[in-house]
Length: 485
Ligand code: URP
Ligand code: ZN
Ligand code: ZN
Image 1 (spheres, rainbow, N blue to C red):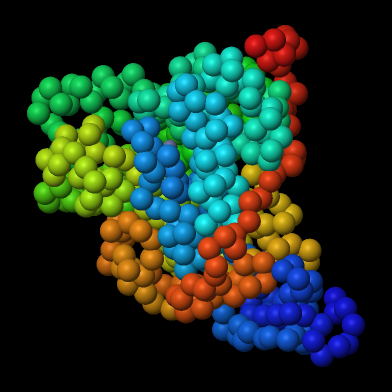
Image 2 (cartoon, rainbow, N blue to C red):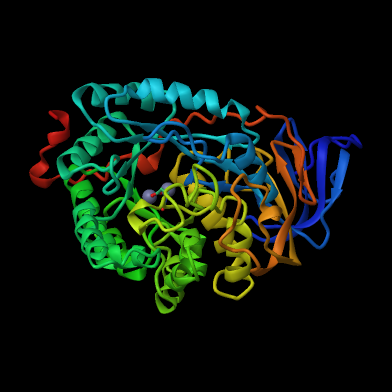
């Protein structure tokens, strides 16, 4: 394991930490030229970090986060690549996959080029999912070129004006992804059902934030998930279901997985930690907890842990989608008495994802340490074609590490998270376990909460074809309609 006997074989040695790989053990990590060059004992480096008493985890991979995303009404999200990177690194995450969004009437290549420009400020490594809102013939024709540029995942919404796709449009995107070799990720909620219930709630004067939950009960999410899977099966195209909020939806996914359908799914800390009761806080405070799918009741939240331990939900991403409480782009953009359909959806969480899952999951005995690493780093790296470079502590991988103090007790405050958003839904929550150092490609980029990295030091990660995106090879009647439309 130890190449040579020079006293400085490595640029950096992380010494004596409990390294979580396939086998968890106390050992050293030797880093050379930004890569993990050795895992073993008594390694010598030009710089040494004492990790005794700490866990050494792979840097987190957040495969679903909205950063500086262009908005349909113009402008961008408040969270920039700079601020999101700082929050990510402070929280132990080193790789992110945010979204380039194509709006109706726009060519994909223009929006993708704009997004590449915005990402030049990143301090973390990144790839993109490409959102398709308008699968016209011209847009579909662009997909092979976009995918070949390393964007191996497309994203579609089955709800939200003006983003949602109808069934025909969704099938066309699935078919285009199949031809080009990309995964499709899906926001599963039934657009028409939500519109119908929302209109009725508003007509009845039920407009407070808590009625957001009433507008989209689990059946709305379950129906769309079932449909998304059935149509993906029809096309024989692998998909991932985003932000599963409850077991009722996970059951649809488990059934399809048991049939051999290539469908994977994620959930997010908010569905494991918060509840619908949070939307009923006094005044307008409930708006701080409005996301879609909506938060569920406490019993449903508690049951969701079983779906991550069973492996049905293989990833815990943040779905970081920051809207400040105040300000012209925030939750109150339409006033403090805005009806729930006029309040933007989404919660900030890029910096709190790992600490919440560690404390509530590992700390409370709900998941193992290995599960934690799988859910937050290895599985997202595998599913999105970033392995073997990202997601694991292994010789040859990028030296992306989170040095974690498993005993550190922290009360979450917004300031600690260092994002651009003016609140966190987890304010005041006590957690045990916190990252004390983050290493990206061998550079120490965060020490005791202070992030030190130059804007632009993050790199784009183009993704090559990989196994997860290969179709299962099961087509009704053996007929591949995707070859024609
Ligand atoms: O409410 C949410 N989740 N907002 C972010 C956008 C999305 O649907 O993922
Ligand atoms: Zn979504
Ligand atoms: Zn999202």
